[in-house]
Image (cartoon, rainbow, N blue to C red; front, side, top):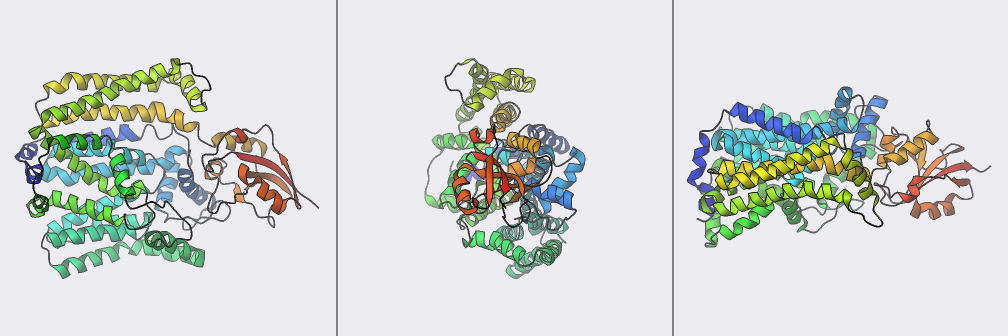
Length: 571
């Protein structure tokens, strides 16, 4: 059974007589909600990306400017405002721009992405395929990680996949009805990240429509009309932002949207070689990359022409293949590459993993069950290792290790999640040998996978990552200077103390000798103190604040110790 057998096996037909689809959708919502929402506030901000986005919403609420708010004293946002709007609205429910409010839009977008994926597959492929695909999507490392981050990527992905699925339905129904939802999703995508939110979905559907034999001009003009209509609402914001920000806003938007794609940015941003995207997908689809590698032992290699029979694929599989290839190739073009750029292909990769599971069930059940037992073993070993770790006496313990060892025994949530993971692993080992359908075998592998992720989200990562956060530094500064601006001096362009600024309520300002007060507090990275002294030592006197924990703590934003000084202007 070669490529044709993998894509067109008869066993898929049994999934058309499945559970009630409403129950399936409700189960997707319940599992997604438990996987992502309860843990949003456990982890402090510990990287510059999350507080940078949250500060935009904070400055919106403080200034009342919902178009182009200024943060850090003079920075305008790098991206359109949709995520900031969502965070600001969520803050009314959460009592402020907290970690929960900041991450809630991404978690809700992930739930919408899972429902969209299940809806896309439910009618033609059946409820079981839709449910398993949605759960694979939720438990793949890259989507799972992005779903609880205060970044634009998951919100953008939800809009892009929504527009892809909506435009797919538009093509399959003859391109005759007004695609209201497509226009809405494209508008949201453009307001989240920029023009790529319109161009990429239209490109994917254009290629798919031509492969399906649709008329060239009808398809092209129809997609052009949809794309232009979807840009009407974003254009209103762009016009208002230009009137407020002027040429500075235009330069920033051109650099972020055009310069990032063409490699003409004024600074290097996430520059990686072409093969970087292959590595990110292989790691981002863990643990299912392991299943794909195991499946190689069950494959029969036929002539290369067997890979070219795309005309025999069902519409869903052809569309998934086209979307995956177009988006992947598109993001290989720019020098700037990040793993989250490829998030829109993960629903389709999850679908292919589901097809792979069914194919393996027909071809090599032993391999599928072996994979499930490997995951079950990990679910058993991880809680045991977490229980043993605090008992080990090590010399020179790291701060993270000590913090974890002191807190794990007193964390009832972590204990419960360890028991759940342990139980899921034991059940997988006991029941996989009795599995009589691919759906049951897949479920016995998915349950321990999700249990491991729950344990990581609720019991392990908060302790580990909170040790990196700059929040304690912000608390010290808050005690020393409860009011007024606090200044920072950093020689590296575009670098800011975003985490400290967030926890200070956007009170940090860049050092500018002409506008600073006669005295105040100044943050300087350890490596930049000498540079500051050479430039401003004759005009200002510095007095180092002690004790100050910043000298022994590597800042999560600057990745080096940071010093706090009291400065005075010399007469």
